[in-house]
Image: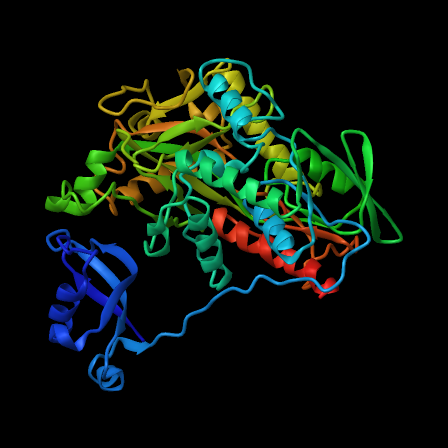
Length: 522
């Protein structure tokens, strides 16, 4: 079998029967192709007068050696299949996974498939209870600090776009995508260059994964806050959960980037932590139809194209950077707060991405040396300070403004773009919320981004503040064996430990940590 890259296929291509289109593009007769299937598909919109699909296909033919010589972009296809490891002996204690977001779920899945029957503790509720709590909060109800957009079954990624693209080059990524499809995700995520599930479908996928874990002998405990790890002479002995001590000697710590109490507990126990780069900023909203026209030109309404997306970055003269992150086509901005007296926002899309607005995080990189001071948790304190500012300025409502007001001053004049964040908004001066470092960088960066996408810096584009939780400002230091440098048997994992960013990379990191645990029992 051959894999053929960089095939330009028209938007009208019938992907259920690729043989006619591929034979035409490659100059082959139909009988020269035994079979052909889609391997990867992306939209090429570099020229708005010639928007098309760029595809890779798997092709079988009787004369593949001749085709390789004739077609420069063809090569032998070497499939990769992830082999779920199996243990040969049982441990004294069951391994523990703390946190049931992407990293924790795939760590638990890898352990359970191996026969290790992990015990899983999640501080938030199971999916249906969590969804009810979040919807109540969006409707104006009280915030539940233990059960919200950040905490609960599925992790913070549950209330997001369900994006599955990543910059990592790890073959386990394919195994993660295949697992998602096995448990209910659309099969297109295996072929789309920018795969996504959507918050609505992701909830069902996570519940199916949970039921599969239970069938393999895993135990999953919700509403269980892990308070501290117990160790002696640098060796893990147990964990304290809701005041009860559980003896254990292997714990995968996958608590997420918002579990600040966990960071504080680790610091108090003198477990090795270090600062790391992170980012903060705002959410920006445009009309999705405007973006479609700006990016796809006359093809904006073509039925084969979904909602357009983007990924942008600029470097400023002072050395700072401004970039977009977690862009949500056809989505909404959400109140992602997890602490009383603070506001933090994020973005979310459902599978159809058919909302009126598009939104994206608009972030400024924060180097490890900021803010000042020697406290390893200074970044967390800075996040919390900004979130408290937002709550105070808005009197509990989410602060919003327009790009025009943010860049030029004066009162915001809302036009065609309306804020989507719930339950209530308050017009605000972002200089009262964000530090000058962030504000000045955004003010310099937005016009430059407007040169990359027409209308990105439109006066009526809406800004919502603050976006503070895009990444963790702390890293729980681990060695090449994935164990903490301080405590043997403790495996820091995922976004909360400071090693990943996004659903896919976190899931892969969970698999790596689980494999390190399994290695002692094979």
